[in-house]
Image: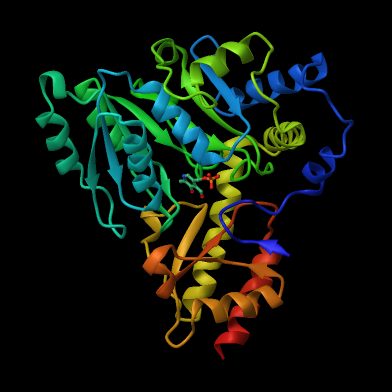
Length: 358
Ligand SMILES: Cc1ncc(COP(=O)(O)O)c(C=O)c1O
């Protein structure tokens, strides 16, 4: 079965086999070597200086990394503006509400790019005690496949001295993230999407100066504590050891294959192949290609074909596609090109589509 859902992904044989390594006690030096290698390799994906940045691991899914980032990095006197144009932007606002963080939302259409003028106006309206210290946004809004324009958002932040918190769960490792820009305080991401590891480990890559101001609001997801203990070759809880094996192997493979530019190029070629193949059958993408990620795209369901029927027919052929979220499940379906996929796999997928569509 090939997974075309947005994670977990189809594994390479190499990553799958890496989980068959010896049982490991997480209080032994072998585990701390593994933890150190994962942290070092995560920084190496973007050639980050470990004196300036650190990668903090947690045994949890991507949402936990986002929660840890938001709950730990916005100080008590801080205020966060959340940009929402999909399910995952909404989720950040829900996390803020649950922790009682001072925050506001800029809610846009799920089908559109964020409105930069409104964001600028909202940031400017917050003055004195109500000043916004942070802006949170989802880089790749997996709800629709839209890649939010990080450059423009970072520029709004830079002019106003606002720190950027990024949900990079479905973009980290494939789409470009400018760590040098100075506004980015942290990115939350996970092992089992563009990095091709397995579910169970997620992480926050955070500037050390932002971490120095971290606030302790949560117990398990306390970013400052996790970072301190990991720097000391320690861990507060029992980690998902086998998922760490897989993450390290996936990161070795990622580096050997050419790192982020190579992964982006591979996904872009597959995404284009899907787009052109479906377009030839009259199936349209929902988001224009120049506003889409290379990671996942959403397509309109052909008239008279329900998602359930399409899903079941493709599953019988060995492909798992993904539904739209909420009401979108009635109008669209999603195809991700993450994981161990080739042009031959996509060719076979398109042949299945053309048989269905006849
Ligand atoms: C952008 C984004 N953020 C957060 C999440 C949540 O990740 P998880 O399901 O691993 O908790 C996802 C999952 O697809 C995502 O795409």
